[in-house]
Length: 379
Image (cartoon, rainbow, N blue to C red; front, side, top):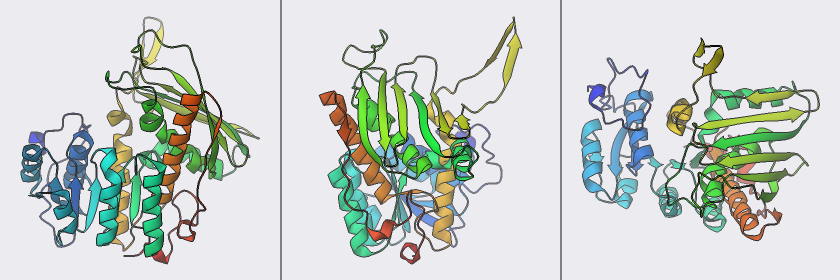
């Protein structure tokens, strides 16, 4: 298949070597057949990744309520267009499911995958409420094995992994606090203040639980002077203070109308030193007495490689008999992130510090941050 004819709008296909690649998954005898639910921007990108970039996978079926779009995409990669998402989940030709549908549909679709005994990679959020996310945790615990991986792709970003390695290696001593920024150039007019917590900073909620290997126990949303360039109804920027179980504190800035680009950075301060994550550097321009470099324009460019590595790790796990890739966010992590986001929204509304309440972690999820890979994770 000629990948240059693919509709990659919004997808970072630059540097994608499609020459000689099987984009229709003809080697189906050994490839994991993935059914993809949702063919919006991220779902379409994932279909292309599974078809052309990830080794060991092929797209077996796709579904979207936009049936014409789903049919065209299915034809493009040699997949079937399912008539409904339950049909896709129950299809015996589908080995695993990737969910990229709207967030309010995730819990029902994930639970259906669990009932069918199929591994599932669910884009964030696992659910739009902590109570719904807990249903997934309880269903997995009752079944006695993890099948759900949640798409917090920063765990696969090379820069964040370097930060994690520096902390675990003891280079900076005991991690005490962290600073984080999460800035977007702009958002649609339908975006409201709470969404910076549930849609944007939810990534920080998972990231710092993972980096510090600690649960977040309280959140405080701090009012900030509003940018004159944002919508009148939008409280932007915002600062959220995250208190961790061991006493560490993270201050996370959300600025969804920063104008200049997509900017995600952090610094972890330890007892012996610090480790900082900057934007990936590509080229430097020197001229007219200035030194400059580009800022990523959007999340697709900044984290495109992390998405690919995340899906590759998932497929690698499945081909070796595992159901959740090592170090990935699992259902417990998805539940915890949803609970923190819910608490942050409550702090946003009340203007006060709000404590996070979690149920007792089931033994199935022993090993914080999705790192448990015991017998229960085998296919």
